[in-house]
Amino acid sequence: MPVWMTNEVLWGLLLILNFGFITIAWAIWGKVGLLVWIAIAGITANLQVSKTVEILGFTATLGNIVYAGSFLATDILSERYGKHAARTGVWIGFFSLVTFTVLMQVALVFHPAASDGMQMYLERVFGLLPRIVVASLTAYLISQRHDIWAYQFWRERFPGPIWLRNNLSTIVSQLIDSVVFTLVAFLGVFPPRILMEIVVTTYIFKAVVAVADTPFLYLALKLRSADDEDADPL
Image 1 (cartoon, rainbow, N blue to C red):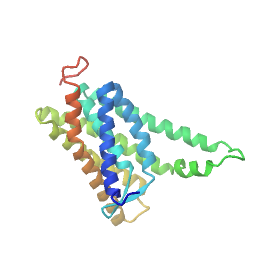
Image 2 (image 1 turned 90 degrees about the horizontal axis):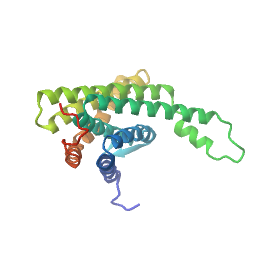
Image 3 (image 1 turned 90 degrees about the vertical axis):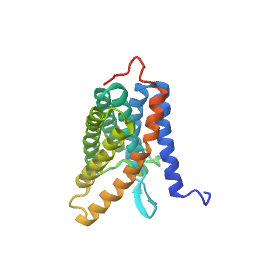
Image 4 (image 1 turned 60 degrees about the vertical axis):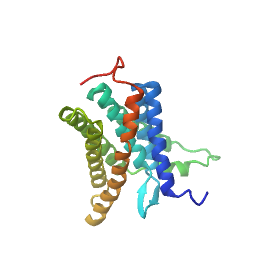
């Protein structure tokens, strides 16, 4: 790997790729593209979260970028189609994550053939602790539903600046997600000081991603104008 290809550079590249793919899916397929992306993001983020890396001296998981990208997708849905479409996206993401987890847990129960060399690796990747899975699903559902509510709340009060409602809703939602996930997953496992460190460092990275999605939101809305026949005006 080239010397310049540091984790910080790769993190930025992953962020651009993530938002870029969301924008492409929206530009080509519109609402359907975003709903598909939300399902992809839920599964991908929960696979990437098992890998930790060092970024700027902090330990972080890779899943934060892809997971945070789902908030951009629901914000676009909220802006163009209203809160009901955004809620549909949240439930599709929730359903995708639940079914994927269940199907893979069943797959692990199958007795591997004598020639199989993948069972041990699949167990390490998909043998998730039930508490971690519950924490992820709970945080996802609560934070995403808040994001949809908050986006419409700020849209009604400040109908002009899209960047304001996008950031106010997403940044707070990311804080809720970090707190809920950490408490459900690790309360009683780590002392309070460690729990606070996990919440703070996780939230910092998610907040950066939340702010970085703003230009992509404007780009996405420009690619498909508000005059689309299926747009849902406020």
